[in-house]
Image (cartoon, rainbow, N blue to C red; front, side):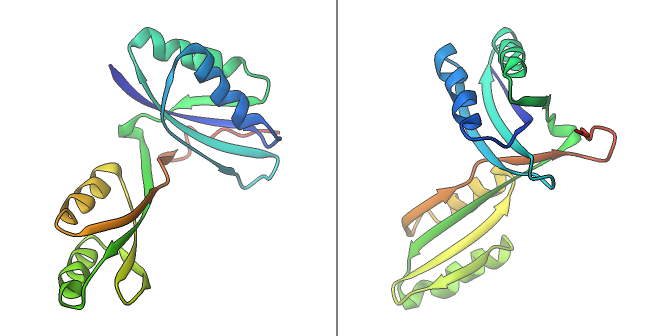
Length: 166
């Protein structure tokens, strides 16, 4: 099993995300992560999909997605030629005596404390999946009340692989 990250440029129309996820569902393909957002041109949306399968399945995914009417471009974002980032928000239950230890972990990872309550801290961290997983692992001794991860967003490095749409 391989894991691939695909970047799609699609028309910014209602139902486009549903049609793409429906294709995955109908064909029995797995979506590990999916993120979507409007591009610099509001006519288009950039979707990043992380999926896995053998070579044949991944080839079929790429071909089937490319055939969808709303899809203007699809490309694989290879790890060596791309930058991936993910955002995580974590709410941790913290007693006053434990705050300095949590703050030290936050500072080490260049995370931010974005909300402080009498019994909790909310932390924001961006980075690659390994960084986020390592951060969460260090919080193992604390009670994580809530956690929200965005999934991967990615772009290819440099200007050689930029897609220009009319």
